[in-house]
Figure (spheres, rainbow, N blue to C red):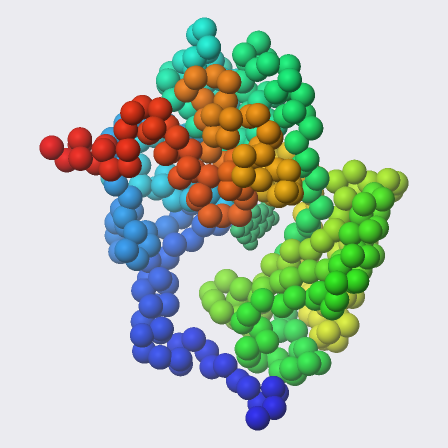
Amino acid sequence: MSLSELKLPDYREQSPAVAARFERIRQRQVILSVRNLKKSFGANGSTHVVFDKVSLDIHRREFICVVGASGCGKSTLARIVAGLDEATGGEILLETEVSRIECRGESATGVALADGREISADIILSNADPHRTFLHLLPPSLVPEKLRDRARRIKMNGTGFKINFAISELPDFTALPGRNVGPQHTGGVMITPSLDYMERAWDEAKYGRPSSRPFTHFIIQSATDPSLAPSGHHTISLWGHHFPYRLAAGDLDAERERLAERMTDLIGEYAPNFRGSVLARQVWLPQDIERRYGMTGGQIFHGDLMPDQVLWGRPFIGSGGHHTPVAGVYLCGAGSHPGGDVNGAPGYNAAMAVLADLGQQRGDRVAATSD
Ligand SMILES: Cc1cc2nc3c(=O)[nH]c(=O)nc-3n(C[C@H](O)[C@H](O)[C@H](O)COP(=O)(O)OP(=O)(O)OC[C@H]3O[C@@H](n4cnc5c(N)ncnc54)[C@H](O)[C@@H]3O)c2cc1C
């Protein structure tokens, strides 16, 4: 059988079990939408259980979570949790900026919000990147100059960019032709022909020039979930490398447009109908990601994942891992071990560090509250 004969059926036709599972998800209508600023979901009339086999058991008023004016990754998850607060307690403040962490002596006493309010807390977990936490949120007098200097030097050189496309028909790839949904549309598509190609893409960026032939991967979400686009139309989410955070020359807006053109041409080399299908494009450069998500340097992992910035070197050597120089303040985001992506591990580790400092272990709390 040749590759072109391969046809992956619509998921609803794969098996009754798969179809039933997708239907269950669809009925629950977990929709996180509009630039991550709104949450909208229901789960069979209840806002308590939003995913299969996942229920969150949070005790009333046990936490306050402050989420800034942006959000992706786990902060999107925070928005899901936000929908649970009536049923389970706790408090989540959305679109709310923390301007500083308040302390007495060398211990945290709470946070001051940009709108003037203050919240008392003796344990604070900061999900802001370590650059912001060490240099902007913690009181300068409590962070030794040596640590402030190291925080300033954390390598945060975002060079990844994001483009969302709205398209009127599926890419018709020359390697596997077809404009109906097929296996070439439902997996990830990578344009990374060789190591030399990748090396050249980085080479330009390291001198401050946007890569002229970036390497990239993209997914066509609507090929798997048709509800994401109007009938017959599709969405593409593309991630590419490299666009330097600091441009050697040129204007950001002009470069943004040039990049979108180059990426449209690049995909067109593999799917000639692509350019003609593009209805709209949305381009986020590292500078846009920084503005939009509060990620310093547009670095999506809150710090480059380089050998000197992982394990005990994360966020920087001598920083104390999840601890900070202020008692009661912890780092719980991607800038701490083991780093970025939506994996939850830094938060888990930070929670374990807090429990250890409180002389408790995982499970102690549950035992105490279930009495
Ligand atoms: C466009 C894009 C695409 C990505 N794609 C993927 C992917 O496909 N797969 C993957 O695994 N990872 C992906 N990532 C990376 C992933 O999203 C991050 O590594 C992850 O979100 C980090 O999680 P976090 O909770 O530590 O930080 P974040 O998700 O950055 O959350 C930090 C939160 O802190 C808030 N904040 C900052 N300062 C303050 C303040 N002073 N007061 C109040 N709030 C504040 C911010 O607003 C933000 O909401 C992507 C990132 C981006 C930007």
